[in-house]
Length: 457
Image 1 (cartoon, rainbow, N blue to C red):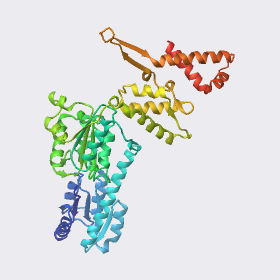
Image 2 (tube, helix red, strand yellow; image 1 turned 180 degrees about the vertical axis):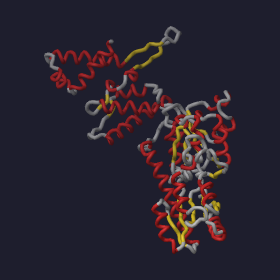
Image 3 (cartoon, helix red, strand yellow; image 1 turned 45 degrees about the vertical axis):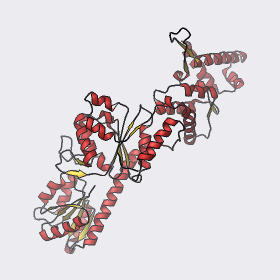
Image 4 (cartoon, rainbow, N blue to C red; image 1 turned 30 degrees about the horizontal axis):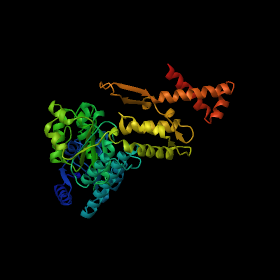
């Protein structure tokens, strides 16, 4: 995005020379001859840097700066002053000016000051966004072995070096955000910002202003101008997660961004060029939404330029043992107490056979919980949720496809209950002694007893 510069000076010659030099350097420049014109232009919230003379015909440049700050305008001011007005320049710096420059103006110095301010502003904007994203960064990278996920990785490797728009589909929890992040990390934009946006979490009335920004006064609560998420991701990639939740009125504006790489802030009359790679993700069928007139067909075709479908976990069961170990390794790294936990064969068999409606996200939660509950160095079926232990088998001996449902967890727990009960009886009712004989912790013994009681109800 081109930096917007405003030159404020009542001397026409200074304005024209300064504006010409800035335009030649690649900046977008506008001019104002007085404070009133300057404030009107600043109120749009689109000016990045303002060169403002301290001595203006109506009010001083310092007053312009003060009024801009009072309105919540974030424009960076470089004050123009004569050598005799150095005291005023110092006053302006105290009022919040970013810098000052002394007449007669030197072109090299002018451009140097602008570059410094733009670089500093860019760093601050990116640092602010990175702080918001720090908790969402992926912990390492797991290498899948299933053919379905190897195909996904193949497609990622193909599309990442390009600037193509990508549509990622798949059930909730399969890792669409992780795929999007890998596309960004392997692209030429990897050093710039990756900004995930949950479209479904933004109220319909605020989607447009959140994405495209707004000017001061564009709507009732717009007490100051705001840069939208697209501009915050300038030079990088933006992930529009849950794109199917986009309200129809905003879909046409998103189409313009995709086709023309331009956007218009809410309340603004000016189009702004942007350089952002767009990645979209959804767990809904956009083609069905198009047929139901709930999603624009032209937007769907534009988003679907390159499609990656992430399979559910039940379709890549051979990756489950490796994923479990991967999660356990990270649990061990984050644990305050050094411990290495494995999964016993029976528990692993149950994990592989479970259908995982919540996919990788659910698997991660279950394994992390089991890591906490496990006694010693092994996760057993007693450390897994009840629904994991339910194994379904289909008997078709009658030709009717009758289902025989056997609760493996219940059978194992019943056997464990008999062992615990016998151990407690042998210990004369002393559960601590019984736990020692069984080689388990007292807390584990109590937890298992409570679990058996719940299952018996």
